[in-house]
Length: 278
Image (cartoon, rainbow, N blue to C red; front, side, top):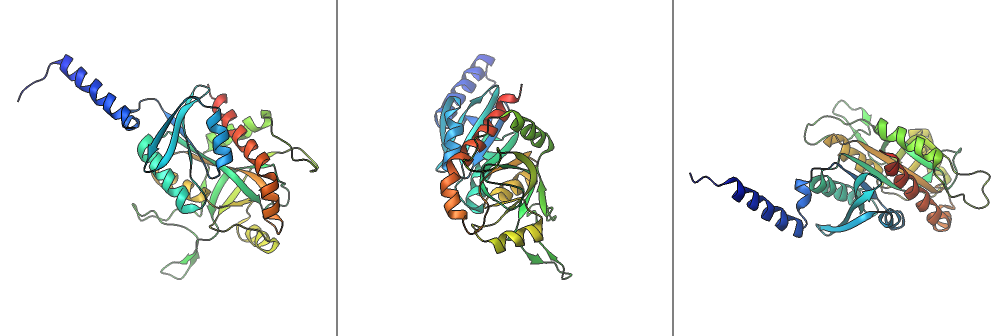
């Protein structure tokens, strides 16, 4: 077999990296750990992108990823779109192409806990589905999904990574969260349970049901899908939700009114978290 000289091999490696980098495939050879920052709505994702240092746009399977730095951290930012399927698709591609060390998913949500108000942040101590139900072979109802690779049952609620959870709550105390005019207090960040379903919840009856059935603090349409993929792949994950409404009969009006403030609070917390890591 013909043996190549070390200099030739170095040249070949350099050419390979050049070609891959110009076709958007260099991420497979990335050596520096990267954090994936994903969001369901455009406003918060755009705000995070604007804070990136040295941003680079990479298109993968039609999805726009933007790499860059926040403080000392290398990150990749992407918009998933609304709903569990869109969120799962973007998360899967992010994990495959960029192999992040951790994933933070953020966006707006409806408040379920009566103690919370628009502008508040719920940091996902755990995240699960409220619209997934089936009956086991021994006739027991469950909302546990199943890992298709291992065939094992997943937990009913996926735990948020404890290190990221602690970082988020600590950072939120020092972050400049924007207050919604007319509300009795400034925004707070709490550790809580987030429930996910392909439904925009906007009725007091559904809020009461989610509170009774799941002891939920917030409801949204993507987080558990992201958390499930990360759980099954062993990737640390945290879901953070900024409340734009209380998921009641005025939710649609409140969401349109408070979306901007909720998005800014969400983006500010995520950016502050990355900048706080040394």
